[in-house]
Image (cartoon, rainbow, N blue to C red; front, side, top):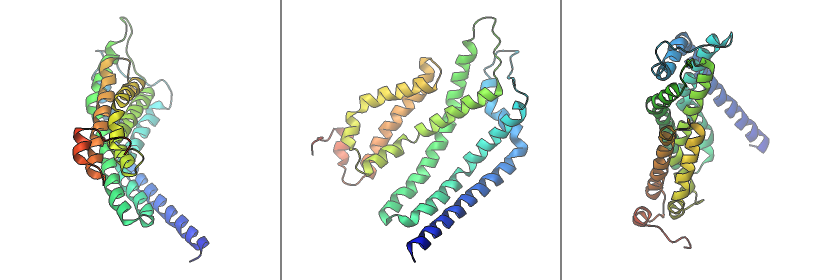
Length: 252
């Protein structure tokens, strides 16, 4: 097979897998669309529960009441179809990988998907109630809290992405160590900087109170530590005893 034929076959394979992913997303979205309003109510529940008595959420634009539930249904469809989409990505790149790379990438795809779901769940069940309680009670006296549903969707989507990506830290650490870009000893050495970076990220993506910032920063730090432990046990050639109990020399 010539190089042109090989390139064309790869393009056809890519188109096929993109089409399958798009069809899967559309099917899931079509199933969820009739429940778009209920999905939005479920998404808005953490905020509604924290609003003062007599307050409610509002729509400040003409089309917002229609498009916001639609976007929520699309977000839910993307989350549900994500495993299948990643499976298609895996199916496209797997033939070009060595056997040892396949053994690594496969579990990492599964683990990263699970961790992303865990991050979104943690944001919804643990972080949202705390943040919205703080925001609802931070309003000055005489100010009615009436959150726009479009702005609310943007805010929670940002937090979902922030926590979903944050929970991928162990995967990133394992990959960095496995590929030799950084050692476990170096990661242990930069731990103080990682903790500071975690709180900086928490300050950027959460409201300006210590509790809300800690709800992102502390899990980020703990996930960094989990990544170090995982890297010790899943990376070949790493001294497990020294990797857990002490630091390795940096000039080996």
